[in-house]
Image (tube, rainbow, N blue to C red; front, side, top):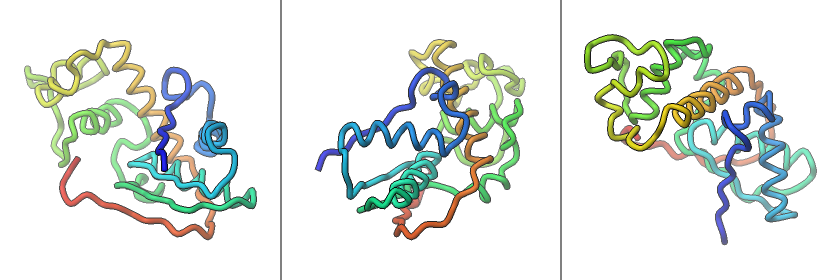
Length: 178
């Protein structure tokens, strides 16, 4: 079976075209249905994508269609996200979370620029040694767009109130950090 990846429309990860996770799921479902008009559908997603895949599966079931698979990869729940410091989308905490995502870094220590100064805006990320390899070839416009996507996803996930549905989910958790 083919596997299709659905990318966010527009810049800022679709933040200008969807104001909620449910709306983003509707947009993604339209893209999926353009490739596969009928189910059963198989959905999967990593991290925020897992939350989005769950909502897509819920919408499919609500429409009376079938879901053959829901795979959540290192995903989380909105309840878990509420426990993360900086989750409200306010800098610099959200920048720290974004920097850790870009670097694939775990832990709780603050990432700092090479001169020891804490990161305060997106452009400061270029001075963080742990991010040098990950940011190679990415200009500040692209980085700002990725940050807008990350922030949009975090805020959508925080506002999302999942509705229970009868879909079996397979949760895959990494044994080591990404």
